[in-house]
Image (cartoon, rainbow, N blue to C red):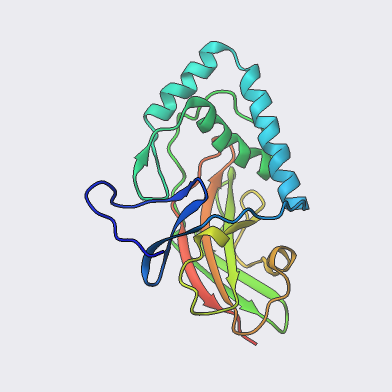
Amino acid sequence: MKIRYGVLAGAASGSLGNMTASRGRGGPYLRIRSIPTKVVSEFTTEVRNIMTACSRAWGALDPEEQVSWNTWCGTHPITDALGDSRTLFGAQGYTQLNARILKAGDSVIELPPVSAAPAPMTAFSAAPEEATQTCVMTYLPTPLAATERIWITAAIVTNPGVAYYANLMKNVHIGALASASLVDIGPDLVARFGSLIEGQVLHINAQVYEKTSGMLSGGIYQRIAVVA
């Protein structure tokens, strides 16, 4: 069912009952909500373990620490799927940052960061190849700062005509601290999406992660075709 938004609703995202709001090349539409088959993999297991750890750690904070997170969230709104500004609860802000920190293998923070998010990279490129199953990244500045890692999310689309890919993006690579340019993430892409095939389209977003805060910089996005 195709729809046109009006005065009461300018946009929609997510599901309500058995209907899901979506958007395609022809504009916004509603579709019957599908319930995916439960998938258990190393990736989903890792996410569940991290979320459980964050939930328990939040409960172990003292009231003053929890209040400090509520205060921090009030001054650090996020942008939601519709592009609107939204203020998280303290537990959500704590989990958002510490989930990244745990995934990167760094030390959990009990108090919210006092520093700003890291500066974004000034240049980034990637070169996915089928023959070598490699995807070598180059970026500036290089190397990154001592407390910074490169943080890569990506999606691989077989049909070049697919325009909407946001729901397909996955975290595929978290670099070493102070890593220098010329990093091959081919093995990470293959482990997540399968073998690289000529003509596939790689959507990739590169950010800088800071280990003492769990914050991410703005991203540099690239759309790149896999070559032979």
